[in-house]
Image 1 (cartoon, rainbow, N blue to C red):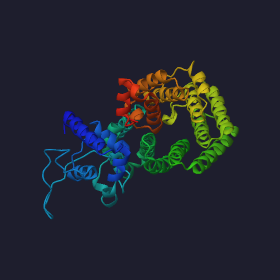
Image 2 (image 1 turned 45 degrees about the horizontal axis):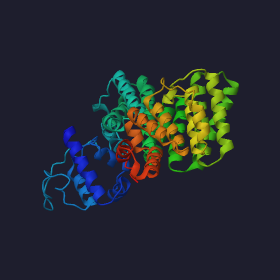
Image 3 (image 1 turned 135 degrees about the vertical axis):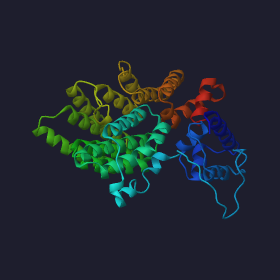
Image 4 (image 1 turned 30 degrees about the vertical axis):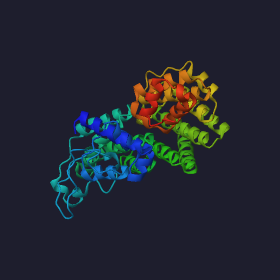
Length: 411
């Protein structure tokens, strides 16, 4: 499909879904896919080329195949041979399914790994997409990359093994981060667990702790707060003991501070106000000791990110005034588009709580301009947009109605 054909197809699917009175979540559940996947289809980001996926959508909508896709061929007779078409859909999930380098196990001498600089550049590109919340592009790029890395890990020269395991750890961490942001926590758990293993094989202890950070965020999305608290607390205690007896590097401080922010999130979600604030204060102290915004292990830890988390924590606890007070003097231009968008999203959420609807809409639209995928699929942003639409009712502005349409948050 061309981009124009994808958009037209997506518009037909969205129209049919709405005629049936289904939300994206409803239809996704019927066909066994995710709401974020369906959102990408309806917005023309991802093509749907395979006939079995087309039929799945048509069956879920209760219409013949030719309604959403007029030029689709008729259903083949039982036993007829059909040639499958290539498709990048759900590559990020599929790459976690099964073993990624089976051929290398049986025929190691016939496989030749890619050059290490090429692999390193490809992994850097994956993280750039993750930081920009460009999930569809990340999904398409990750499909061929992980098998290349897994092949290299089994066939490269011994002196390159650790570097390749480190690249695999970074790649699986990027996958975990992306899955968490799209609320696909089961896949994030698998990716984080693989990241931890690869970091250990790379001889990178701090990479293991960074992987635990990703794992904890998967637990939070799964609402397994006890598991998240246990994993993060164990990691914090071990890392603190190490720092007390050894001169810490900036990387040590970045990872420790990020784990404290994770615990703040856990306690905020559990409604434990005092514990959440204690963890924010601990992270703030580490950020001041670090003295600068860094991006060790793609955690973006530093004084600015601590305050972004403080705002998010305050909003989660219902303290909108505190969140807006912190935001007044905060500048996040030096951080990634994802972090800047997250800040604007949480300021928007705080304004919703304060019933400052015009300011809330302005923040959410600015956040969408920075990271459209995140704002259109994140549960918190969609809830904020839905609250705005409910409050406005029939008097909702064209801008609000359009945003609610894009986020599938119409009241």
